[in-house]
Image 1 (cartoon, one colour):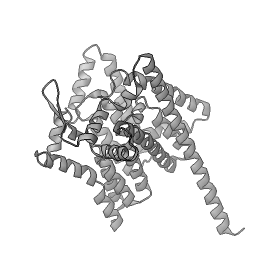
Image 2: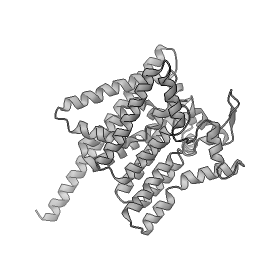
Image 3: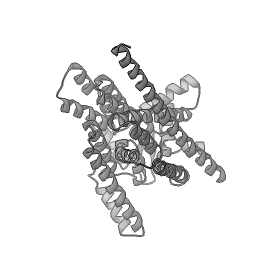
Image 4: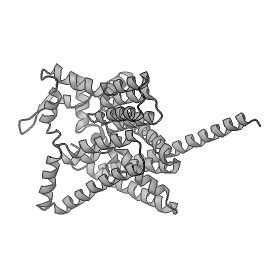
Length: 380
């Protein structure tokens, strides 16, 4: 057999194996999502409540539906007198809900559930590709599994924007690793239309361009495209509301959100440590220390600059902004590169059953905690 034919055959076999492993990852991810949803449905049924309502008709999901049905400029006066505006919510998810409603006739919130389901699978796919490129296919399988079994992973199945944002961010990062600059810029722009933390994806694109010192027209185009989504919405929101270029910051301020360098977080932690929540405060310190350790560990293991920049900004914005601190865990869902050191460690365990025992136990915790959380305080 000629060398070219052998090479082509080996490439085809490798591609088939990779597709099979990705399919295995997505099946695993979907299985965990089903476990979480079934647990939620059973728990809600026992309490005489609706699982559908907590997934699609509470908290932020209602604000997205209002944007679909009435456009922007809906406000709500909070008990403390603050005027809360729907301009705090970025437009890509409501746009998709509106398009899905027109195409299918479904209610916007049900379209939102479908968007999250598809986006979470797309995110898992991209996470697999990134982890596989960096650390091998076995680590990739564990990376997807770990993202699926996070304690607040039930948010991946809600009519929220976390899954959509993570998918767009992850595919942008994957495109950067492959030096596909136009795709990276387009995905980054779309991520910027999804959540304020889209800035993290744009910075990853710019950082990759700076590190490569290669400024072809594709690189420049990707860098120009990357911030357009977030910058465009922030400017439109401020100018159209009559509050000026930075009016969006006023909107977030009314919601109690704003970058303060971690002062609000420190006060929250201090209140816990000085009161009956002392144990919770200690647990919070341990959790933050673990996040920082994983971030540093990822850098030492050679994570590429785009991932390092992206994860750093997501961490910074989650921990150093004011707001409702119960929502911090879900704000960290897009920081999937933090899971890569754990995935790599699990992939290297000689006793494979031990690694899967860890994943299985975490899946059970995620299913139970997700139902408990959503049927209790839940995300604001």
